Amino acid sequence: MANSIMYQEDGYVVLETNKPEELMTESELLKKIESVLINQSDLFPDIAKFKTIEEQARYLLHNYCEFNPDDDNYLQWYVVRWEKK
Image 1: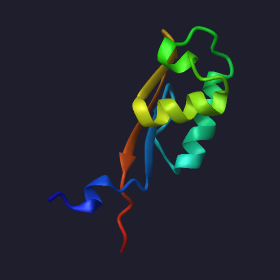
Image 2 (image 1 turned 60 degrees about the horizontal axis):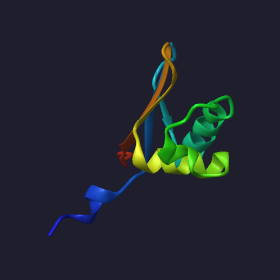
Image 3 (image 1 turned 30 degrees about the vertical axis):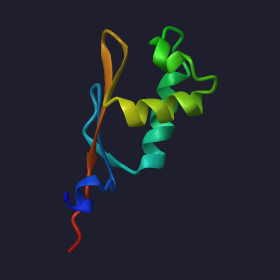
């Protein structure tokens, strides 16, 4: 049986165009994704089916690890566990 710690999500490492990597909580990352989605009109059908930006952001967070708002920019996120000392 797999150890439950394998499924623990403490936060995310976030990579964004021309910015240093950041550590974010889930709520911080959701706000970041929402801010990127506000200016998007051409979304994949599986994302566009959601009516609100909040629903679209939550779907992206849990089903993707990258969103490219255009050819020159990217937003990537990866689950991390915080090390406790």
